[in-house]
Length: 116
Image (tube, one colour):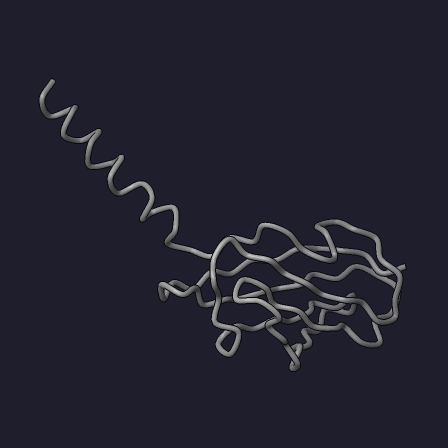
């Protein structure tokens, strides 16, 4: 019984630190599986914590299977990355992101969308 209480206290104390260990995407434009009008689209990614924009990357997996790095990434707020996808033809895309959180942890993710 005593071990269980100690374990519970340790988990409760460590819980907030574990939850803050990675930047989690909380909202995006385009939304996951959205259909958007091209050929230019706004990209906005909001995270649950501060990210290092200078050490973060965005890229697009295009319908033909090639990957295009998005070179111009702005950071209008500490927890937001924004960019523009230019000249996107109709088809299925995957936006891939990699961010460095303020605590030093790298997080990667992706979201698919359609250009019509």
